[in-house]
Image (cartoon, rainbow, N blue to C red; front, side, top):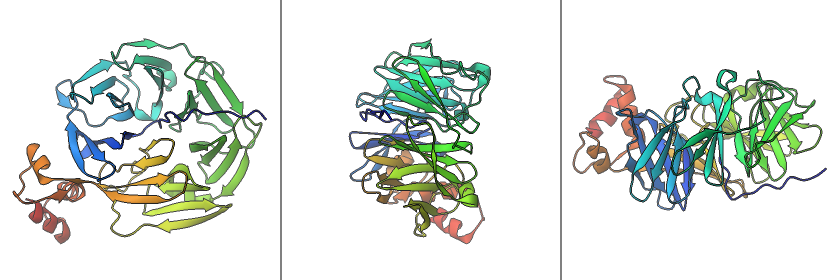
Length: 367
């Protein structure tokens, strides 16, 4: 079997809600509708900017990349591309035409000075190439739809090296697209007996999470896949698969437990009680970013987040704090000496008045 060499200069994960560049994480805090950043060394978080489109702060953005000069983003509906200048805080917005798409029907990658956005919905199927700096967009010729023009692709899509991988919403198939040439390869894999909802790559090995609980191992380019383990009903609790060290991890959409697969056996890893995910829903672990060394999981509605070390397999939790002065600048009324965590503030906002004594105490300590 011919091995496939992957460039590790950049590895962008589709549907990420953060990017990490030169020790700084840039993320979009959806509940406060603001672009924020955090020093990965000190864990100090701060506001970076509002992103205004059509006169309003956007509800959310999907992070594409950061290169030290510019931060590239998309709106989840696929309508707009945003290039934000890290040096002076200026940004420009380009309309790229995703009127009928959603984030479940977008994938993207970057090659050279261009960002490529895949509109995978059959009704608007196309690939748009965007100049990273100017925002100018044109349609990129790509043959990835030719074998199955009516195929729906799932959101299990991501980039490794110059290749973007797409999962059709049917078992047995995978598609690899070269951003350099626009050419695609379609893999028919009889051993892939379940629709895949996620995958992760380690070297030349891909691990795929099946919708009914099976994890598959595929040596990229070979003719078939092997079943690593059958988790049965467990998978309904888990939405993301990552590889760290010699183990495979599944991350939850519900609950507080990770699932670790080691040498064909699975075990649950329970998180400490004060590790707060904020909102308990399938989105909490879906938005993440991966580089050559780490997987970063910012929590969109909480100031508790975590990372996986891809070499050692270790994960660490950290807390992002936004000082009261920064919250006050956005019109929130706080006591002069108060420093409040973003988690506590958001929980207070979501709880409303008189929900529980605990939330009332939080609110009284803040306001």
